[in-house]
Length: 362
Image 1 (cartoon, rainbow, N blue to C red):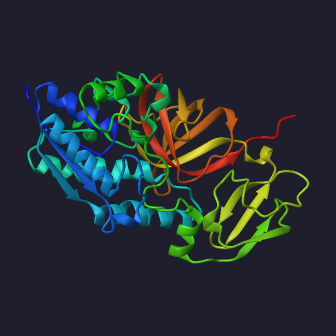
Image 2 (cartoon, one colour; image 1 turned 180 degrees about the horizontal axis):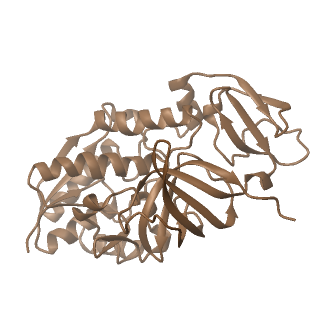
Image 3 (tube, helix red, strand yellow; image 1 turned 90 degrees about the horizontal axis):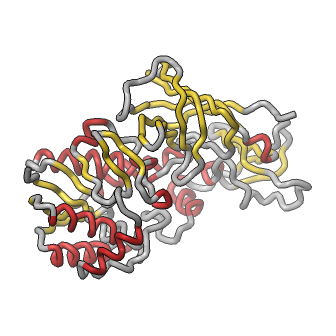
């Protein structure tokens, strides 16, 4: 069956090979590059496969080699509203957002997919390293490049119209295939960092958007041990940049209180949590578990996977995901995603809203 497929082409090697595979399979493929900034020069030059003018040119050249039509869609307003402004607001609220996850959710698999379906396309293909098996999201065979965590926010309807042609191969195999196909991006480095922060200085970017707001750094007993220029520039588990060089032992950010503009620090042992609550749960691989189920959870992109018990309950503001970790985790920050797995299969996800500290080990 021939499908009309919109191939999202970032300008990197993964999306180029993904588009080529879908076209070679006999589908009617159209390539599209997303212009995410009104002023592309303000984004990271050489961002290596995401968001820049150079990437747009690389994507067009790849489409020409593949032999498919190619367009550029201006998604800058949606990107600024859904990703950049959300990023700033989340930090201002004391959370630690993941902008790439937000971009996948709100831009690539909501705004783009909605437009694609409206234009008569059957599916959107991307170069993410992940598999889709029987309609469910499954880890890539290349564990080092697996991106199931950042796609765990997708719902079943979005997955129904998604194609992931690269989930059954490694990154080295993708590069070798790009070379065989004559794609100039075969050796292009992977994208890293946040595309809309041109100099990589997240704290400076936030200060320009929010403004410096000096406040206290305190210990767990409430004693002021230092000062900062804005609680929005910190994240849970942070050690560097605290300006507490005279402290006898290493201290880490334990909590951020944005209303009082207070940052609390303490020893690494105080970062241990074994309870997590998540909001806005999405279940793409199972029904919401109203009774506790045994599973595994991932708390950061490319982070450790933890055995856990999870269930969904009704909270004050809607459904909540409750997670009880079998072993404590550290550096768990509100605003990040908790993704629930059964083996390699994604069951669902939620946005972390709060944590509970693990009991001190004896």
